[in-house]
Length: 208
Ligand SMILES: [Zn+2]
Image (cartoon, rainbow, N blue to C red; front, side, top):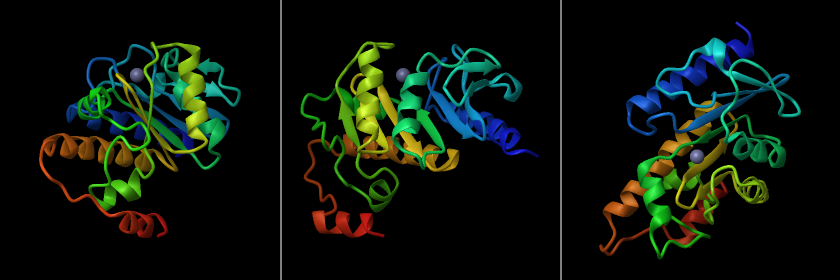
């Protein structure tokens, strides 16, 4: 089995898993994976619950669609991470409810939208940044993501959702799920006095 065949199957399997667990819904959310000669991407207007490996969009190494169904209209969110981070092998973008909810709170700090509540959040997601709201498809949105991608592998788009890059598709999916669950914890604890990890504990985790 070639790397591309494996990547096609992994995209469909993980997309269906996230759909079945309510992390994505309707035709929202999209995934991409770097392959030898370009990228595979989920198609526009496709449900992540019902993808066909043979119909995934294929983009050449300049980001032009060359085969399969047309790629997601949010392709630029993915390409910014590949451009700025050479080690990125996959990107996940969802409109997942708890992460979006955090982006809607008036007092969310764009530099640290979610406190370091658990070790796995710090290790898998690390340095999350929130970007301001832009209408879908606005070239300024793609530019803001590209700029942020140079500083961090994970961004939260205000009033929209997370975009998370990883070395592999599994790593990007697990980091996105860790982000969504930590957003849920953060919201569960609003109004409670909490004990996030200390700055020294975070630094020690990031150094590992
Ligand atoms: Zn989106």
